[in-house]
Amino acid sequence: MNFAKELGEAIGKAATILSPDVVHALEAARDREAGPARVQLEAILENVKIARDGKVPICQDTGTITFFVRLGTRFPHLAALVGALPGAAREATKAVPLRPNTVHPFTGKNPGDNTGRYIPAVTWEMVEGDGAEVHVLPKGGGSENCSILKMLPPGVGLKGIKEAVVEHVVSCGGLPCPPTVIGVGVGGGADLALKLGKMALLRPLGKRHPEPEVAALEAELEELVNASGVGPMGLGGKTTVLAVHAEYAHRHPASLPLGIAVQCWAHRRATVRIGANGTMEVA
Amino acid sequence: MDRVLTTPIAEKDARALNAGDVVYVSGTMFTARDEAHRMMLERGSPLPVEGLALFHCGPVAQKVGAGWEILAAGPTTSARMELFEADFLRRFKTRVIVGKGGMGEKTLAALGEVGAVYTHFTGGAGALAAKAVKRVSAVHWLEELGMPEAVWVMEVERFGPLVVAMDSHGKSLYKDLSVIVGKNMETIRARIKGGK
Image 1 (cartoon, rainbow over the protein chains, first blue to last red):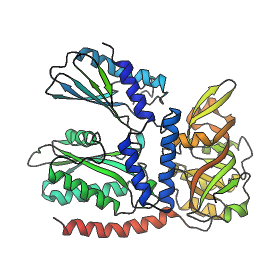
Image 2: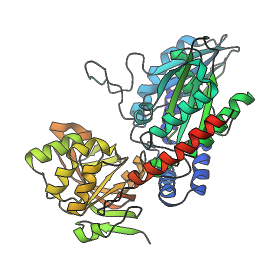
Image 3: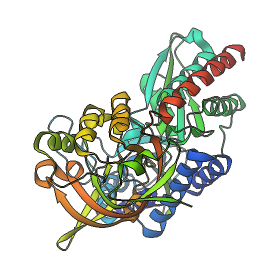
Image 4: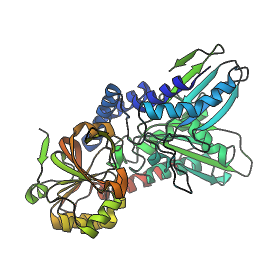
């Protein structure tokens, strides 16, 4: 089994074709904006079209390649899949091409193929079944620099979580290239809260968390952040976020970790489903 | 009607622009990031730039034959150039700055003194920008500074849309907006406190 080629194509698809749910959210935002905010969204949508038609990257920052794998515990091709992930990054770097974005933090050396120590970053989640679902999330630097962790005192409760999210996203202004998608991770621990925030970004826009309490928090946070007036690119307007998604894990009684993962308007992602017989489907 | 500024842009044309206007640039544009600003101030400009458009950008360029092609050219965060920009404007008199995220008080004052504007190009729209670049006419200091920091001189046609975000009359959309956002935040905080 060689999965590198198809997975590489999925990275290329993510870099050049914005998924329909994100395009739809951007179009809806354009339709409710006026003035400079509308000009920004029109430029974004034109850029999305040029990239799709010309098969060129949507943004010059093609990001750090990140995989999230939902792995069936009976999936029979695990060794092939593990080996294919860095290979896919190399394939896509040449084929698209992608900007070589992996730099050694101490020597400054760049291998030039978007791989390196622990990169592409991979998160494995074991689930029941015999297939594998591979999510690709190439993440740009400008928005990632706005992602943070807050260890809140549990006494601040849900209000404290809301306040921290709104204050942070608004304080970022135009830096993460809004309108952004925000992934909020609550509980678990310091590392897990941030991971949950990032995993929340994988859910298609327009789809709420299945639990009503979490879904209500998402809707309220969207409404509150958008009431700030920061707007597209921080030039003012009604749309600062396209969506807020939340995920949670149970927490320690003494801790209330809050991870905020910030994603730019170019919310690039793709999904590959691999069957037990090795068939691949790119979504 | 879209307003197109053609280089060389005259001081009076730059002074006629107001924050909130949407414009396009045709003609000659050159890139300069942190290092290029420093070098131009130390050594002088490698080309005459009065009246041209200055682009805060590190493009992705590809060598094609003897020349270059720009593949993606979105703006970088302009705030980093605040260190240099006021001196740069006084000395080189570029009339239109293209970047993202806005600049500070020193630059705003220099825009007024010199007669120039700061414009915002959509962050991330690298493909749209590259489409407006018709030709790379020169690249300076490529060896010394590398691809992102070099001075790329590009002939552009209807580069934009550019939102005039800081004008020569002391008005800055960013400054005005921060007052509005500050007020909105007071309401939002009260709503969270009063909620469930």
